[in-house]
Amino acid sequence: MTEQNTIGKGIWIDKLASELLEREKELGRNTDLLRVESGLGASGIPHIGSLGDAVRAYGVKLALENVGYKSELIAYSDDLDGLRKIPEGMQKFGLEEHIAKPVSLIPDPYGCHDSYGMHMSSILLDGLDKVGIKYEFRRAVDTYKQGLLKDQIHTILQNSVKIGDKISELVGQEKYQKYLPYFPVCAECNRLYTAEATEYIIDEKKVKYRCHDTEIGSKIIKGCGHEGEADITKDLGKLAWKVEFAARWSAFDIRFEAYGKDIMDSVKVNDWVSDEILKYPHPHHVKYEMFLDKGGKKISKSLGNVITAQKWLEFGSPKSILLLLYKRITGARELGFEDIPSLMNEYNELEDIYFGRIKVDNQAKLTKSKGLFEYVNLLNPPKQSSIHVNYRLLIELTKIFKENRNERVMKKLIDYGVIKNPESEIEKLIDIAGNFADEFNEQEKTQVDVDESLKKVLKILVDALNSKEEPEDIQNTIYQIAKSNDVQPKDFFKILYQIILGTSRGPKIGPFISDIGRKQVAKILSEYT
RNA sequence: GGGUCUAUGGCGCAGCCAGGUAGCGCACCGGACUUUUAAUCCGGUUGUCGAGGGUCCGAAUCCCUCUAGACCCGCCA
Image 1 (cartoon, rainbow, N blue to C red):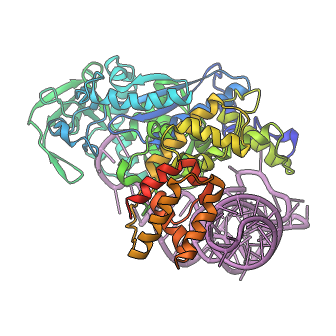
Image 2: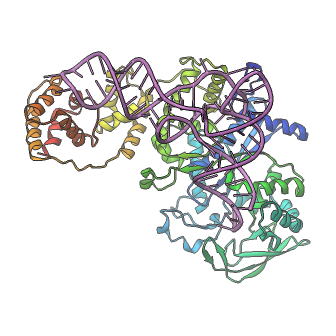
Image 3: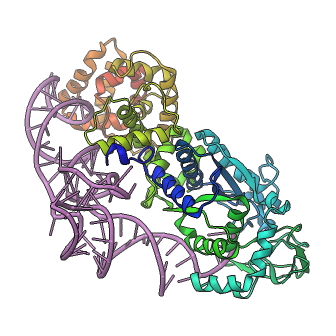
């Protein structure tokens, strides 16, 4: 790669934006405003993957602006989605009766938002706010209530036979050859999937439906038997996913939307519907892999399996999230909180490259790294480098110091020569590193076996620590005590680490004991004598 | 049935999307320091880049075929 053919800042986002622009030119569409869209689920607790969808779309918006176009991100919450499953940890709220109702019609069990759906969406929006993403928020419930999609719904229902056949051909799903791709909300019981629409009365813009028992997953949802007609311009209902995107793209004039591979088939159908039925050239796409939970690791157990932005931010900076999401788009990823430390350090490395403190010979890599750094800073990079402290070092230090943590870790960092003066920037890092240490420190309470001879030796050490010994001598003292009492120093040190740190290794023990405080250590050790 | 991704030292991974010196962490070996543990620091070893073919001056990277594994869709959204 040379200077002249670098697109934008040189990363995949720029390439995507340039593909998009090329396509728009070919189509000859107006490019005054290029809208990008991201969908938010509102039926469950938003995973960092849902955040990723919006963050990446925002990246494309930035890339478009960077080359002189106006762009806007629509964050669309599908809060007409029906509640199908009660999320982990929410069984206590008695949501059973609301199963199959649109999440925007279910009261917020936490009582802080106007509905269950809004509560969930807000968690995601809060995450976006915290990492600095700007967006225009729209809700499905308002979109349908205001009839913004009524023309598209009308066209789709008029062509339902053609669409049903095409869905069957493209993805092998035959359901829509029988039913309309539109689900009214039952006027009697407020449920969504139970109302089956069989006929569209074109002149009246109404669908006929009957509320019957239906199966979701392995559960049977009882319908109320109501038969009625729903006005698609007024009454509540929603298009099936296989056609809904297309309606929205056309109505909102969306030019770009990324999607996860799990909805690949839906996108395929929607592209066709958009192009052929609604006569709106579908937006440019990029497909991404889903984030998977780490297999076989215990880390998620205490936390539930959901990695939310909020939880991530307890342990890592907003930039670590942006780095995760902007560094690449391809490739299946197993993701866990244990990835945070390397991302924190990787950001520092990028910053060093950006400010020329690390030399990179390969011009292409240099351009890419700099570009990535700019995107992680949302194309508003800092003027000066921040102070860098290795995040893993911070975690180790915060493991050791639990009391007066900030002050003592800061002092250690100054001792080590990592920093010169206490900095508020570093204070924040110590806080989150401390959170990480507290949450993930393997408190395996390894049963420390202390036999009689060891007890004796420990007692001698406790006495020694309680005397007025100089800290410099602690290391030697321990060694001497072990040796003169026929205990292998190796074993003795190991036992000490186990008692003090809960691990079998650690920092040099003499200075370490004086860091914690001799009296304190003596007290801990005496419990084993 | 349809589709996507992954395969790189002993282990875990980066590099691939825009071809140009195969890299990192852990482990391992050696040295320094330490009164022999540990920690720290310095140095070092480890690779037919899953297999085969193609394009190219040049392929881990691009194209095709194959093998193995993971996941998604074929309820719903």
